[in-house]
Image 1 (cartoon, rainbow, N blue to C red):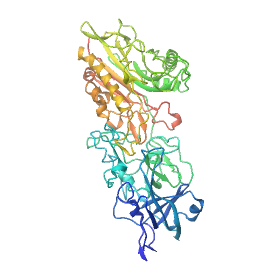
Image 2: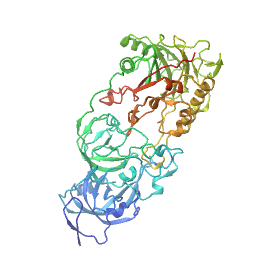
Image 3: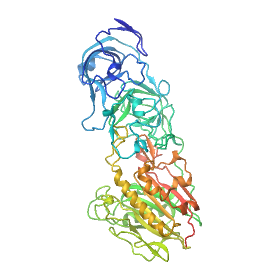
Image 4: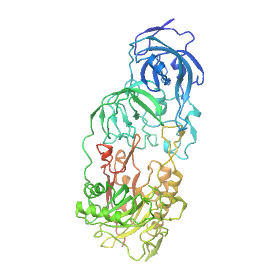
Length: 616
């Protein structure tokens, strides 16, 4: 017999002969050194119970790589009824590394399966949680040292190696996955948590606590930025709050919601490290203020522009009036608006309809009813069921434009779905063979994806502007950033890279004829500009408007997903526009909504202003 001081609770005499400690089971890497072995006399205090078993806290370790918490997996009512929170217990069983067969990219969970010989040694013991930000603090840059490419976790190629195969000793002071793994199964407290997005469909939501964070934006979210190591910051200091262990219901939260301290168990599931709260968190405050209308407006010497993914907009969409209000009230009716996800006239009904003129007419009329501004519009209807998106919807890009400020350069016919727009030379200046037209629509890169919509415009005084409205293929099928594959699987990044190269080549073909051409490219790229290798063909030719306008890096976001405030929507400008002045603002009418149900689109719109350089 030996007297052992257990961290946070009273000193108790427990047998140690022929025993295995929780630290022995956890080890200092991702997988247990005792995986598959039978163990006996494993002792610890019960810190929490749930339908899948209970959690133990063992004696402390001097090695911060080693967790002293452990999941005991059992659904046996007999076993569950034997223990209660605060009991010091001893048990045996088999050490296992578990992950769901339905998601082989999950990290393993170290646990004891089918526990035996459960013995309660004492009751009413108290456990002091690890207070994050005080006792331990998460790193703030990288998820794992295996993301070794120049773009860190966004590097290509993806899936070069696997965390669980390498099974390297943890470095919790450097890497987020290592940090949370070093606390697997332990009871922790998150002081002063702040929600950094809406809940998912299970009521789970991401937070950061009162510890050092990077990329913090004005709303309290964590934006993707480039860290001091020159790599994209993965924001590993955030964690997702799971369903409460006691069955209570989590509250509704939004970006910037403040909560009371959350105490719970660190656990890995569904591709992420979670904190499973003991009981439902409590909201103590909301973010200050709401999205405000832009101060960027058109004037006689400039062109204002907007960009908005309006999320499957059909003539009968219930959110159409709100979209119209956003464009009229918050974007101040820009001279030209790049819109994406305009559906055909029958919406998602797959009846062979492809034209979207009714959808666009309904939208511009709704804008007029709010603003007294009457937009014209243009589209090229796609071939039926070939451009991806919601089945039957035939989503496409379109332009809304104010005819008193812009009109199409005459002389070229409008292209159809399969016509390839090209640059031709007229009077030593670039112009288009189709206006509007689509970039290389039969190229394999655009299979089941939207083809960019190109147009050439002129102002009343004869200045010209080329625009390219894009909506690249989605990230569907990508893996969790917190999973086994390193770098994470970013599908289909090779296709998006080809698509961006085609857009860049088209812009370059304009500039080869006129190096001072005014070119404005905008839309939903479904990719972060921090994925620099993917964007390099375009950034070699054009400049991101956020950069040209000097928008703070942390405020460059139009979308919130998992722990990140991020930009999927981008605007790029030619050197001529940079030299003549660029402004841009991202208007957070959706991601600053007080509840998920009040969000109109999953994207925020952007608005900006350019001055056209003289190119007569």
